[in-house]
Length: 71
Image (cartoon, rainbow, N blue to C red; front, side, top):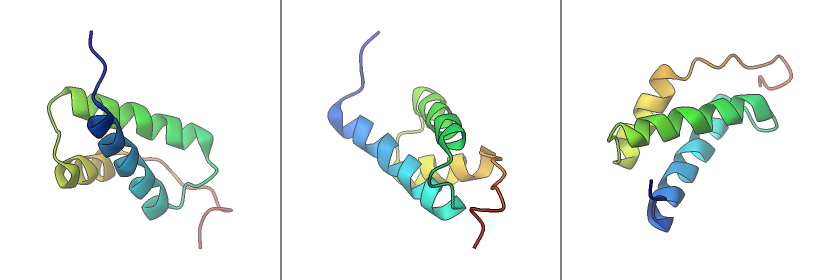
């Protein structure tokens, strides 16, 4: 098993960060961990374009926000 390149790791991290901001999940460590797993699975399935990875993550990541995170 090989590790992803730095560029691929940055891609996944940027998608996670963008989803966290879009969903208002900052500080929700459990939700962020779930997102990380989701992005890793999608990446390993071959979704490697940023826009497609972001869109698919947003579509399948059904992470409820807490009342303190809602604006």
